[in-house]
Image 1: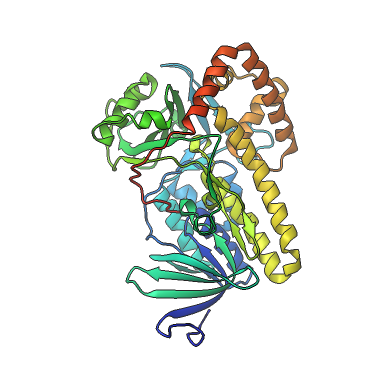
Image 2: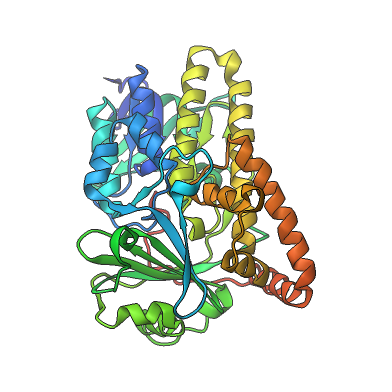
Length: 451
């Protein structure tokens, strides 16, 4: 990597010339940066915060593990993770159904891990450095400059001491998370018109776990105003939160902790596990956070992970979608840098594949809290391997496995027939979901957009 200040408008501004600039040092950014550096490209990775930093999205999917294996960090993740053989969905105050990943169709891995994101993200960031990435923390990218050909050719950043940095690059990977650097600058970011939610959450110790291997399962608990998660982590820590309809979160009065505890108390199946619980982290609130950008790619740039879209964390898909899209982006960038004539075709293939997979997650997410979906999850049946296909979806296998995708289409037909049988309840659920889209929630207590 070279330094050249001669062409900079201000000689005091340090200038770096690189092949690829990756903005955002989370799982998506570090994955793309590592893979591109391995292919011989000069890669600069800029992260606005300093690791370790708090983040939610602590539950990985089995389909994360092949990516981690290809990166060469699977054993390290295993060492910091909690073994997660499945996901459980309570039926009532006592009973619950457990969907074990080993039952997925053509399962590559029959398990996953739960991780403290500050440890997981720091591990991936350090691994990127070890693979030749110039990875820097506490450097915030403020703006992207474009050349006359419409391609991004420079970025303007500032470090923690206020020093300016100019980066000249051949390609840009936007992994900036909810900051959506390009989405904001190019006005591509749009509120999701089909789904909206908000969340309140914290970490606790002393929460009762399930027995045996099931002690590491994520619990996804519906309640009348949304759904709750209980994610077991190392050191007796349990990540607990509620993703709420926005109009419910707007009713909170007083401090956030009291509101969270009242919410958990409303569901005995969750509250009964908290008799000896002690909060060990701040209570965070994040407002409306479902959005999609109108474009994922452009000449000389590509978005990955949450920089492009975020829907709802109910199926723990965020980290996987980020890392999966980063792998695809690495192929696009590498191919385009070697032969720019291939760029449009490579980008089109990436966009088509990722949008198809994302739509399968979205279809389930939009309907998860409806009476129809509750009925189907509470009464699973494996006719034509449909239940196994749903488990495959929960495992993240929604892109390329045709056996899974065919059976998910059958599940949609079963959903439609069940909706007819439960027509009054189904209609009320649809109306409530539509009403939430127009409700705004403010007062985000997270650093907005930490990727």
